[in-house]
Length: 359
Figure 1 (cartoon, rainbow, N blue to C red):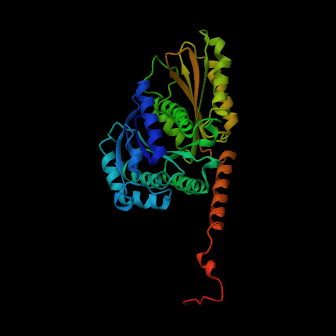
Figure 2: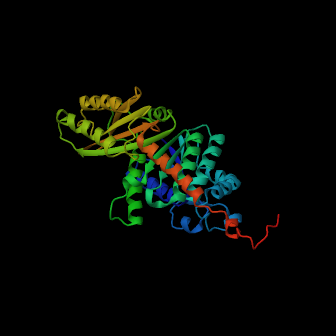
């Protein structure tokens, strides 16, 4: 899939950079171009991408301070500037645009839905979102922002691929180191989805191409990606269990949104040396995925790579029924309730008989 990436906000800019670098390092050529947009100049400066600073008349390059309503307003006002910067990059070769954002911060959570809406008005290709859910410890404001942003993103985008920060941050890691590791993991997953059917080595028996990815994501709503790999024997007959185990691991322990296994549609690609991939294992894995997700739309195929390992890449679409999503949404709803309770009436401080009301 030939794609153009648009990173919004600090987290979106960093994840977009990781995606572009993964694609370039692997030589897949799936990422046609990438751009980063932010209201904070300091967050754009270190990125090795073309950047657009928005909201200068409102926040003077200092960011929106976590206020996603302001983030949405600023992006709405400056959307034309972003679209103008993006226009030369979305060529006839482009098959999709991905808007990448952290859903907790002000610029990403507020601005991403605005840009997805505007892009869908301008382009005929699918416009997907990649959203990073904030962790439980990131504060009430981030939960509220993410809940509102996700609700809007799902409505405006053709599909929204989610990454759950809580699931991927390791204990004892520094915050910065943790996010770098998360970005690298997500870049591999999304990067391989984009690369399916692009620059591959060898001939696949059943190729996974752009149409398979688009048809899977046509289910819309929320999506998740999984990945796992294991050493492969030279004889494909010895790799039946290797293939099935890799697919199971990619779903049970390798999903970007853990436990999101109820899905409307799914795609599984088995990557590796074509001479080592077990067709029997691939078919067993596809049937297992059909049973696990409860979906009758499970597509499958090969992803030829020069490797001594077998890898499984799984894309699940329409996962909003999962317990993980519902747990997050309840967290966001509770954060909204807590936020309302925490806002006292300033006039309450003056409730006494010694001061008269003006009106």
